[in-house]
Image (cartoon, rainbow, N blue to C red; front, top):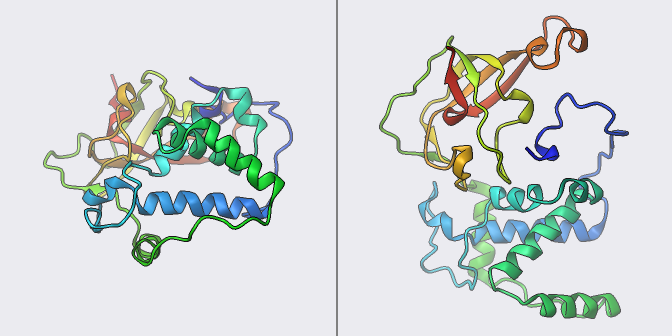
Length: 247
Protein backbone atom coordinates (compact mmCIF):
# COMPACT_ATOMS: atom_id res chain seq x y z
CA UNK A 1 0.00 0.00 0.00
CA UNK A 2 1.08 3.59 -0.45
CA UNK A 3 3.53 4.93 2.10
CA UNK A 4 1.23 7.69 3.32
CA UNK A 5 -1.25 5.01 4.47
CA UNK A 6 1.38 3.21 6.53
CA UNK A 7 3.20 5.69 8.75
CA UNK A 8 2.49 4.11 12.13
CA UNK A 9 5.65 2.55 13.59
CA UNK A 10 7.95 3.63 10.75
CA UNK A 11 11.34 4.97 11.78
CA UNK A 12 13.65 7.66 10.40
CA UNK A 13 10.96 9.74 8.69
CA UNK A 14 12.71 12.93 9.69
CA UNK A 15 11.86 15.68 12.22
CA UNK A 16 8.25 16.06 13.35
CA UNK A 17 6.59 19.40 12.56
CA UNK A 18 5.05 20.80 15.75
CA UNK A 19 3.44 23.80 14.05
CA UNK A 20 0.39 24.67 16.16
CA UNK A 21 -1.24 27.33 13.97
CA UNK A 22 -4.32 26.11 12.12
CA UNK A 23 -3.63 28.51 9.25
CA UNK A 24 -0.02 29.54 8.73
CA UNK A 25 -0.70 31.73 5.69
CA UNK A 26 -3.76 33.78 4.75
CA UNK A 27 -4.41 31.88 1.50
CA UNK A 28 -4.93 28.67 3.50
CA UNK A 29 -8.11 30.14 5.00
CA UNK A 30 -9.52 30.61 1.50
CA UNK A 31 -8.77 27.00 0.54
CA UNK A 32 -10.58 25.83 3.68
CA UNK A 33 -13.51 28.09 2.78
CA UNK A 34 -13.69 26.73 -0.79
CA UNK A 35 -13.72 23.17 0.50
CA UNK A 36 -16.44 24.02 3.03
CA UNK A 37 -18.60 25.68 0.37
CA UNK A 38 -18.18 22.63 -1.87
CA UNK A 39 -19.30 20.31 0.93
CA UNK A 40 -22.31 22.51 1.67
CA UNK A 41 -23.36 22.35 -2.01
CA UNK A 42 -22.54 18.67 -2.54
CA UNK A 43 -25.24 16.74 -4.39
CA UNK A 44 -25.05 13.84 -1.92
CA UNK A 45 -26.68 16.01 0.77
CA UNK A 46 -30.12 15.18 -0.66
CA UNK A 47 -29.81 11.87 1.24
CA UNK A 48 -28.04 13.28 4.28
CA UNK A 49 -29.16 13.55 7.89
CA UNK A 50 -30.43 16.19 8.32
CA UNK A 51 -31.91 16.73 4.87
CA UNK A 52 -30.93 19.73 2.76
CA UNK A 53 -32.96 21.40 -0.06
CA UNK A 54 -30.61 20.34 -2.86
CA UNK A 55 -33.35 20.30 -5.52
CA UNK A 56 -33.96 24.02 -5.09
CA UNK A 57 -30.49 25.27 -4.14
CA UNK A 58 -29.40 27.83 -6.79
CA UNK A 59 -25.95 26.38 -7.50
CA UNK A 60 -24.10 25.25 -10.61
CA UNK A 61 -22.18 22.71 -8.52
CA UNK A 62 -23.85 19.32 -9.17
CA UNK A 63 -21.18 16.90 -7.94
CA UNK A 64 -20.57 14.97 -4.74
CA UNK A 65 -17.82 16.46 -2.57
CA UNK A 66 -17.05 15.29 0.95
CA UNK A 67 -14.07 14.93 3.27
CA UNK A 68 -13.48 11.58 1.58
CA UNK A 69 -13.29 13.28 -1.82
CA UNK A 70 -10.63 15.63 -0.52
CA UNK A 71 -8.63 12.82 1.06
CA UNK A 72 -8.89 10.63 -2.02
CA UNK A 73 -7.28 13.35 -4.11
CA UNK A 74 -4.48 13.94 -1.64
CA UNK A 75 -3.79 10.32 -0.78
CA UNK A 76 -3.78 9.31 -4.44
CA UNK A 77 -0.63 11.40 -4.93
CA UNK A 78 2.72 9.82 -5.57
CA UNK A 79 4.17 9.30 -2.06
CA UNK A 80 7.23 11.53 -2.45
CA UNK A 81 5.03 14.28 -3.89
CA UNK A 82 2.66 13.81 -0.95
CA UNK A 83 5.39 14.51 1.60
CA UNK A 84 6.87 17.40 -0.37
CA UNK A 85 3.85 19.71 -0.09
CA UNK A 86 2.33 21.46 2.89
CA UNK A 87 -1.07 20.45 4.24
CA UNK A 88 -3.19 23.03 2.43
CA UNK A 89 -1.08 22.76 -0.71
CA UNK A 90 -2.35 19.19 -0.98
CA UNK A 91 -5.89 20.47 -0.48
CA UNK A 92 -5.37 23.01 -3.25
CA UNK A 93 -4.03 20.35 -5.60
CA UNK A 94 -6.91 17.96 -4.90
CA UNK A 95 -9.60 20.63 -5.30
CA UNK A 96 -8.06 22.08 -8.46
CA UNK A 97 -7.66 18.64 -9.99
CA UNK A 98 -11.26 17.80 -9.20
CA UNK A 99 -12.64 20.91 -10.91
CA UNK A 100 -10.55 20.23 -14.02
CA UNK A 101 -11.39 16.51 -14.17
CA UNK A 102 -15.09 17.17 -13.60
CA UNK A 103 -15.20 19.71 -16.43
CA UNK A 104 -16.05 22.80 -14.38
CA UNK A 105 -12.96 24.57 -15.69
CA UNK A 106 -10.28 23.86 -18.29
CA UNK A 107 -6.68 23.52 -17.15
CA UNK A 108 -5.59 26.40 -19.42
CA UNK A 109 -8.34 28.61 -18.00
CA UNK A 110 -7.23 27.76 -14.47
CA UNK A 111 -3.63 28.69 -15.31
CA UNK A 112 -4.77 31.96 -16.87
CA UNK A 113 -6.78 32.91 -13.78
CA UNK A 114 -3.88 31.99 -11.49
CA UNK A 115 -1.50 34.15 -13.52
CA UNK A 116 -4.03 36.99 -13.47
CA UNK A 117 -4.07 37.09 -9.66
CA UNK A 118 -0.30 36.63 -9.39
CA UNK A 119 0.18 39.77 -11.45
CA UNK A 120 -2.73 41.61 -9.82
CA UNK A 121 -3.09 40.28 -6.26
CA UNK A 122 -5.56 43.05 -5.39
CA UNK A 123 -7.82 42.44 -8.39
CA UNK A 124 -11.51 41.95 -7.50
CA UNK A 125 -12.49 38.37 -6.67
CA UNK A 126 -15.55 36.66 -8.19
CA UNK A 127 -18.96 37.47 -6.75
CA UNK A 128 -19.73 36.16 -3.29
CA UNK A 129 -22.32 33.35 -2.84
CA UNK A 130 -25.96 34.34 -3.09
CA UNK A 131 -28.12 34.48 0.05
CA UNK A 132 -29.50 30.94 -0.33
CA UNK A 133 -26.04 29.41 -0.64
CA UNK A 134 -24.72 31.48 2.28
CA UNK A 135 -27.59 30.18 4.40
CA UNK A 136 -26.84 26.62 3.29
CA UNK A 137 -23.15 26.96 4.16
CA UNK A 138 -23.94 28.26 7.65
CA UNK A 139 -26.49 25.51 8.23
CA UNK A 140 -24.01 22.88 7.04
CA UNK A 141 -21.37 24.19 9.44
CA UNK A 142 -23.87 24.01 12.30
CA UNK A 143 -25.57 20.68 11.50
CA UNK A 144 -23.07 18.79 9.34
CA UNK A 145 -23.75 15.47 7.63
CA UNK A 146 -24.16 12.30 9.66
CA UNK A 147 -23.08 8.99 8.16
CA UNK A 148 -25.80 7.23 10.17
CA UNK A 149 -28.08 5.28 7.83
CA UNK A 150 -30.86 2.66 8.06
CA UNK A 151 -29.58 -0.91 8.33
CA UNK A 152 -31.52 -4.13 8.87
CA UNK A 153 -28.88 -6.77 9.66
CA UNK A 154 -27.45 -7.38 13.13
CA UNK A 155 -23.73 -6.70 13.79
CA UNK A 156 -21.52 -9.70 13.05
CA UNK A 157 -19.45 -9.17 16.20
CA UNK A 158 -20.16 -8.33 19.82
CA UNK A 159 -18.39 -6.69 22.73
CA UNK A 160 -15.53 -8.88 23.94
CA UNK A 161 -15.03 -10.72 20.64
CA UNK A 162 -11.44 -11.18 19.52
CA UNK A 163 -10.97 -10.35 15.84
CA UNK A 164 -8.23 -10.20 13.22
CA UNK A 165 -7.97 -7.09 11.11
CA UNK A 166 -8.37 -7.71 7.40
CA UNK A 167 -5.76 -7.03 4.72
CA UNK A 168 -7.80 -5.80 1.72
CA UNK A 169 -6.39 -4.77 -1.64
CA UNK A 170 -4.60 -1.43 -1.44
CA UNK A 171 -6.56 1.48 -2.94
CA UNK A 172 -6.01 5.23 -3.27
CA UNK A 173 -8.11 5.95 -0.19
CA UNK A 174 -8.78 3.76 2.84
CA UNK A 175 -9.96 4.19 6.43
CA UNK A 176 -7.85 1.24 7.59
CA UNK A 177 -4.45 2.21 9.05
CA UNK A 178 -1.76 0.05 7.50
CA UNK A 179 -0.17 -0.84 10.84
CA UNK A 180 -3.40 -2.57 11.95
CA UNK A 181 -3.57 -5.01 9.03
CA UNK A 182 -3.47 -8.70 10.09
CA UNK A 183 -3.24 -7.72 13.77
CA UNK A 184 -5.38 -9.18 16.60
CA UNK A 185 -7.70 -6.93 18.56
CA UNK A 186 -10.65 -7.06 20.95
CA UNK A 187 -13.97 -5.32 20.43
CA UNK A 188 -14.73 -3.06 23.37
CA UNK A 189 -17.79 -1.27 21.96
CA UNK A 190 -20.35 -1.78 19.21
CA UNK A 191 -21.65 1.62 18.16
CA UNK A 192 -25.41 1.96 17.87
CA UNK A 193 -26.79 1.98 14.32
CA UNK A 194 -24.88 1.66 11.06
CA UNK A 195 -22.76 4.13 9.15
CA UNK A 196 -22.15 4.69 5.46
CA UNK A 197 -18.89 6.08 4.17
CA UNK A 198 -18.94 9.05 1.83
CA UNK A 199 -17.31 7.22 -1.08
CA UNK A 200 -17.24 3.59 -2.14
CA UNK A 201 -13.67 2.35 -1.80
CA UNK A 202 -14.22 -0.70 -4.03
CA UNK A 203 -12.10 -3.71 -3.00
CA UNK A 204 -11.20 -1.92 0.22
CA UNK A 205 -14.73 -2.77 1.30
CA UNK A 206 -16.50 0.32 2.66
CA UNK A 207 -19.17 2.66 1.33
CA UNK A 208 -22.53 1.05 2.06
CA UNK A 209 -24.00 1.26 5.61
CA UNK A 210 -22.49 -1.17 8.10
CA UNK A 211 -21.78 -1.44 11.84
CA UNK A 212 -18.75 0.33 13.29
CA UNK A 213 -16.75 -0.99 16.24
CA UNK A 214 -14.27 0.33 18.76
CA UNK A 215 -11.36 -2.13 18.78
CA UNK A 216 -8.58 -2.32 21.36
CA UNK A 217 -5.04 -3.45 20.48
CA UNK A 218 -2.10 -4.35 22.69
CA UNK A 219 0.68 -2.00 21.62
CA UNK A 220 3.16 -4.87 21.72
CA UNK A 221 1.11 -6.71 19.07
CA UNK A 222 1.45 -3.70 16.79
CA UNK A 223 5.00 -2.46 17.38
CA UNK A 224 6.70 -5.37 19.11
CA UNK A 225 7.68 -5.69 22.76
CA UNK A 226 10.98 -3.83 22.40
CA UNK A 227 9.33 -0.72 20.92
CA UNK A 228 6.23 -0.53 23.12
CA UNK A 229 5.62 0.84 26.58
CA UNK A 230 4.20 -1.80 28.94
CA UNK A 231 0.43 -1.92 29.53
CA UNK A 232 -0.31 0.35 26.55
CA UNK A 233 -3.57 -0.06 24.64
CA UNK A 234 -4.29 1.45 21.20
CA UNK A 235 -7.92 2.04 20.20
CA UNK A 236 -9.33 2.35 16.68
CA UNK A 237 -12.85 2.83 15.31
CA UNK A 238 -13.24 0.42 12.40
CA UNK A 239 -15.91 -0.47 9.87
CA UNK A 240 -17.18 -4.05 9.98
CA UNK A 241 -15.66 -4.79 6.55
CA UNK A 242 -12.21 -4.49 8.13
CA UNK A 243 -12.84 -7.15 10.79
CA UNK A 244 -12.51 -10.93 10.52
CA UNK A 245 -13.19 -13.67 13.08
CA UNK A 246 -10.17 -15.41 14.57
CA UNK A 247 -9.40 -18.77 12.97
